[in-house]
Length: 223
Image 1: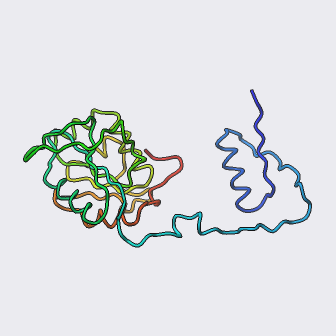
Image 2 (image 1 turned 180 degrees about the horizontal axis):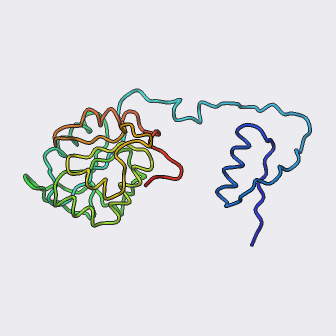
Image 3 (image 1 turned 90 degrees about the vertical axis):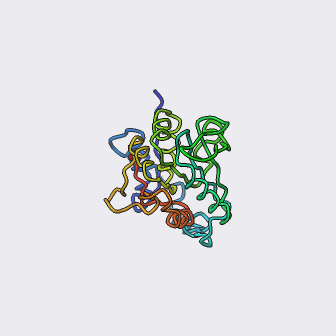
């Protein structure tokens, strides 16, 4: 079995913490002694902090233009609020897409059919900036029974992206093992649970404008 060496140059600060994290990930119980420095003199780093490498340094202008939003649909979903939300997102410059387990169309519990823009297989969760989970018992039952849907929802959550669950949609979140609060028990501002099918749009748009909600993140992931 090959030997893996961890090389680090200082027993102080972030470098030591990084070495400890790498050792833990490799299953090493004790951190090895550091390798000797190539240069004995101290070298001043060219860059200490680079705002260009930080997502927080570029918070955006508060709009949701160009953000891609996946709206999950299936037969039996409550279609009216989904169509209204899609129109709202498009008016504000977002790219709303109806996503389902297969192409074609779905028949909502009332109203006209909804054309599916793309299937889960063709457009994985990483391609979207936010997610909408529909209401409707039959739709939720169908989506819960598809492992691809569950992984799609989990990935959106793991990547700290905004999620809007319309009424019964919270049952799909539960099926994914998603906790409805942050690790410290506080409300998750990126997880909007609408008590009514026509509610939550304003909070969802505000959450999308913030892009990611890193307070949700844990290592290892909870889901």
